[in-house]
Amino acid sequence: MKLIKTFKFFLTKFFNYFFSSKKIIVSQEIQTTLPASVLMDNMSHYFFETGTADGDAVRLALQCGFEKIFTVEIDPVLYAKNILRYKKYIDEGRVFMFLGDTFELMPEIIANHIDKSCTFWLDAHQDFGPGGVKKCPLIEELEYIKSSPLEHKLLIDDRRMFGIWWGEGINEELIISKIKEVNPNYIISYADGHIADDIIVAKI
Image (cartoon, rainbow, N blue to C red):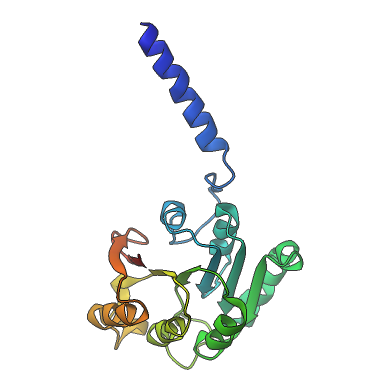
């Protein structure tokens, strides 16, 4: 009986700590295909997102505790909306938002800003809004990341879309080979996103 009470005491302490930690608590209002658990398992100093959309992944990255967050959005309406939403963090120098196409902007951002290990959330693609040079610049984004000498972690969304719609011309074999060009020591795994195993994870 005493052992059971002791176990319950420590279990209660654990859950109180788990759910009170700022790095663990994630608002239920956040709507992103990037699960908090996946991001927490792939923490780095910085977070870099391609395709800001409604900005919920930025909010998630803030709550997970990244030092700096970089995000690129091609839609000027969404960009303006997120500039207002995250003005406090932009003013603090913690969030950096860029308007434009990752196909064009990413090399300069990596060269000028990414001086520490980074978790890249690659999710840029054309939906129904403004389009860029490519419907999905994923291959080029991986080429740009390859230019960095630092050790990064990669999270690639929408695996289910390879070969169809905006993912036409992209296949998993090609993407894996490009990932290995970034770092041949990467270990590839999969995480659940919009559907099961929809996120490719690459890290050492």
